[in-house]
Image 1 (spheres, rainbow, N blue to C red):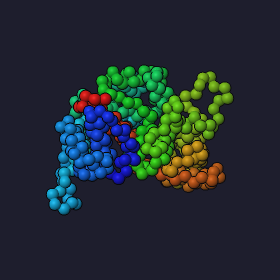
Image 2: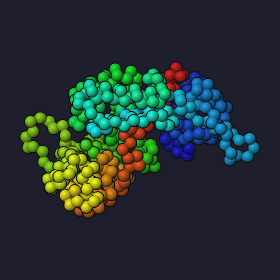
Image 3: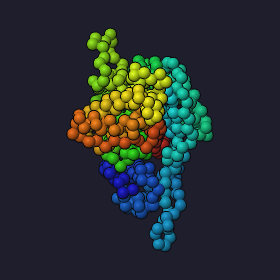
Image 4: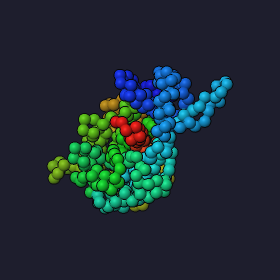
Length: 403
């Protein structure tokens, strides 16, 4: 719990006793969420509160069933002090990752403990069937977790694209059929009847790795996902950076790769980098070289590991394009760490040798690259992490009657 003060920032003291009491309750609840189980003296020391104040606030939280005793410490002499933790059953969270090929779902309690998990193929052909598929998956996942629908505190859905809150639309989600130009949030709200957040999948992957994975000790990191689409999630000082319109990280539109038509008939839905860099482009390059067995990017990388010439040539081109994207990210953001993920990005071990050669040619910067710890679950775990943050506020307000 040593860094909890830095995580929480400064709290403004309130004058009214009832407001001050609420601030103290929220502070202790946040400390237990971020730092884990603690004793009353530990909480008082970190929070800067007197022991009577801590005792009163904990008593209130225990009465509201938001925290609970969880045993005693064994390190102190004499009577061991009681440890307190959040009550994980005070709420539940659903995280969903909607990808072009797969829909992944995870249900947890407020401590992040897994209650159920389901992965299914995405066979939806339009918005309505996609919303229905997600709805059915959430219903099954909730039932498998032993929960009633109304017991879900918050649902977070990860999707390609950028959510426009003014129009309730997802922009730049060309890889999901019928997902654009539709009132997605309204449809999901009607389907679930609970609090729903929609966020960009790369943002959630970055948040997931920061919360549970490889970048949890890193203050400035970038998650570069390469799969059916291409995107970036940016974490700066523990917060997602979204840009002015929420479009920060849409690197698929970087002018890198094969030229697009000189006079397009309409505004392009997919950018130059994504057209040249995504999983379909890897397959296309291998096939153009003469590889007949390449049906997916996974096939190409598997063949490259076996020494197939055409597959290896496709990987070399992909690595050079990846180096250009990384060089651009470094020049603009100078992150401490770049995490590479997605179906293509998971093969960093094959891509990195050629990338290093290309990076040495392009830039004097030497970024630190790694594959994420969370693998294909990065987005759904990021959705759960964001859901827990929002759910803990919701359960506090619901049980105290405050906002």
